[in-house]
Image (tube, rainbow over all chains, first blue to last red; front, side, top):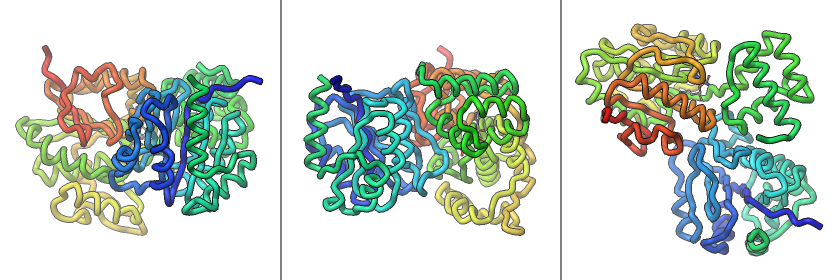
Length: 193
Length: 275
Ligand SMILES: C[S@@+](CC[C@H](N)C(=O)[O-])C[C@H]1O[C@@H](n2cnc3c(N)ncnc32)[C@H](O)[C@@H]1O
């Protein structure tokens, strides 16, 4: 059996996102080797405070993604308000203001679909708490291209709709609570060394 | 370069559009182009990009609708009000020292950015001495820009943006509402020229004091960004200004050293004096 080395992580979350994403990031060490992309549904018309919020809880390098920024290990790239976050196959970030998806810009599906295309089996996709179905189609796409897929345990999620919907669209996704997700990511980071 | 069949097809499709119609999207950000052409593929009920290629090669009107997938037209009047406030309060005082002014709005889309500037120049008493060039590659967008007609339901947002951008007076002074549309005053276009110009393939056409190129570069790959910024750099007078979209930066381009950061937050740069 060959083990695919994981190269990147993509996380999507909506209502209840701050606590859920923090709970994961806070458990990862400063030198965690994989880059992490995060889409949280944020309102389009004001600056987001998420960088500061997450940075206060994590030793990783947390930043709002910039257009054409190269992707580095141990960095967390957040989608800025009013822009979709996309990953190019040459492992660069692109931003886009094309139409909202599921009424949202940034949208989780857009990140997941482009990241799946760029990383294939090297990607881990994670759908956390939220009250809409953004991320479902994207998670299925990650799985089809060989990536690992995870949904947050709906019982634990502040809002179970999004993980439930993702699980329905992508039944092979593993269901884990936040602590297990962090543990899983730590292990994946290790096999990468 | 990716060797997935789908990506090979995508490159061939873009090559076909270039050779047949001289629209060059080969150096655009592929993640976004691929997403939008996939939507076009379903819209034209094609299973593959190759099928779409066949259609676009043989049917000219397919190209016209593909252009609306290939270019992104999202915009607002006074989009990112802070940007316009910085132009008004910090850049205009410099521009005011010139007896005549030229402004280039590169990738003007449906014209929202041009009308925003035109209104602001009027409010600041600079309109008579200023010429604005609005350029784009999408002919349909240029026609809309020329018309200056926007859906009335977008006006509450535009009005709020105008205020946040430091607007003097009321936005309604500049348009008349009729049949669900806001028709902007044609006097705002008195010193405006809209024309077809591509940042990919066309050259410098004027010497300007300010280039506003917002949310266009994000659709380009790095090489194309370098090319486009090179054209803007060459168009600018000594110490001229360049304004970008709120998430765009010169940081990852080869021209970063040719500019000073004038307002980091508003993404306004100033061309350095020649050494
Ligand atoms: C998202 S709109 C930006 C509109 C406006 N500048 C703003 O920020 O609100 C992007 C525009 O860039 C135009 N564009 C795309 N490729 C171009 C090129 N090669 N040269 C000039 N304009 C281009 C598109 O047609 C579209 O109108």
